[in-house]
Image (cartoon, rainbow, N blue to C red; front, side):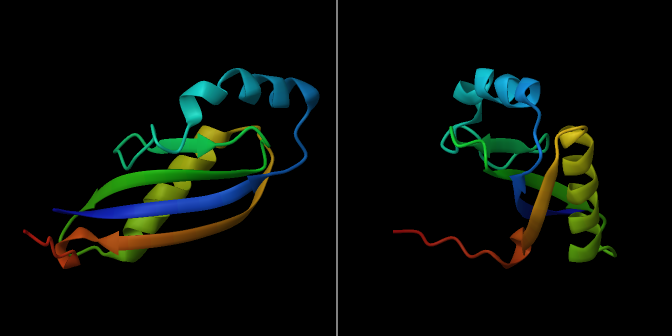
Length: 104
């Protein structure tokens, strides 16, 4: 098994007044600085309730690769967004085996 860090960005669209109010009520928990890469998915947006991002750590078998990690993250995002209208999704993934850590 190895990890991918998957970032999915998008926009809320066609929200009802109730949905916008619900998102506004949760705003304090959705700050980008508080929502990093996690297995559950860090979910962030700002007071404009427009753009959003999800940041996941997705573990896949060694035989599977980026495509599987992206598919799993997209499915998780769509499930979490549920009835909230969204669009303009873009995805990026980084294989953590390829990340080099610099030590000073």
